[in-house]
Image (cartoon, rainbow, N blue to C red; front, side, top):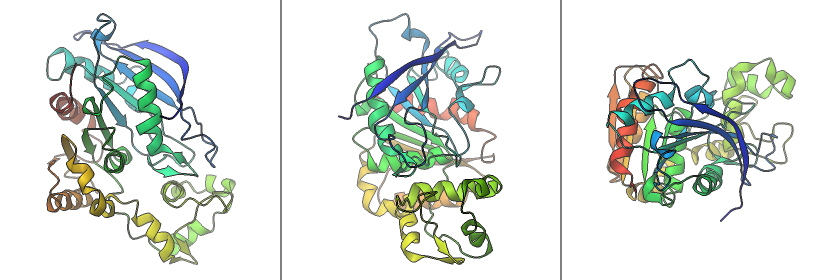
Length: 338
């Protein structure tokens, strides 16, 4: 078991709400050996939002399952759990738990925002070993600090967009830690074909952090490249772009491909079959609907039982509603409770 450390909570916020019993939100920092020494210089002790249901404070003997929630690209944990005054996820949880639509559980979301907009929840010397951080460092720390049910049968993993991608890749690699998965509007499911051309040339022309700051449109390319093609010997960005002179480099393209859940499925379908339940959803007006449908079809071919649902909506306009009506009840049905 990896070592871990906890930094004392920065804030302790009582959740606003009138109709429902109020849960509690803590924002803490959790040190991760898996992130220590990353070449980006990103924090190895990221912020983590922890939602504790209403009964947590009043019933000192009760233990709870935990759902780890992964935010999307350019987002943070505060986008879901703060700032005050917004329709926050903890308020949704209060209502769902109070009206009996789902049983009470702990919700945990780490902040993986970095200088490129997001860590992709991948293992990378450049951005940090985020997959290991979530599955080992964070889970271990939460099990130590809170009254959890420390068993995979009581752990779920959910996420939106980049977080949905993280759900699929971590779920495929760590069935020993998580038993139920819910991926919402997942990005990056089939990234096997990097593109060359003028846009690639523009990426190659960026050679310093200062130039990158003037070309914000390059951030997503830099984010996925730092996560999927790290190179400790290639400063200042410490990764290998998938093109040279605007032409795709096959060796680097292959490194992109092995990080694609579509490609991973060939060798990881067995891990998904170990899950108690797997769910995917995506909006009908979401540009990512095609790749989500393709992965669902491939999972069916490989005998991975799952549900796949589409709905009227775009990439983000109904995420709060889906979290309330679908995600929390899903984990209530499929996780083990004390």
